[in-house]
Image 1 (tube, helix red, strand yellow):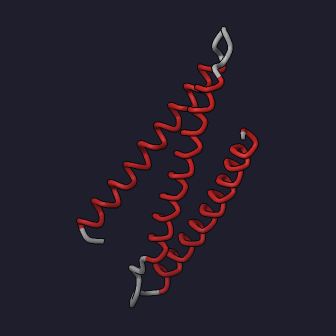
Image 2: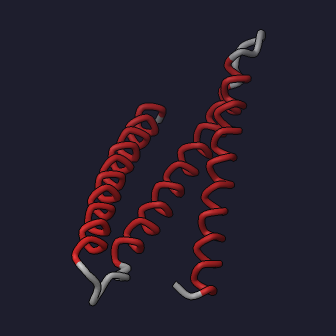
Length: 116
């Protein structure tokens, strides 16, 4: 991977990290609102939850794209067997992570449909 591509990858991952932090902040804000002694304000809870769901979807999509890109990268061509097999095992693990992310997305969408 060239230095330019490495920097771009780090920038994309930093963006994902910021989205994760914001999602956690939103979850905390909703929890605070739910604990409000005068009762939660529906519009605030709905707003935070909608933003949270969108952030999770964006995170899932970005991670999926990065994982797919990592699987398509073929650094071990013309090398020996062990590194290739290790790479294939890693790709299988990443495919499993993608499947888990898909399930999370479906669950989140189910929550979104229930709230509507």
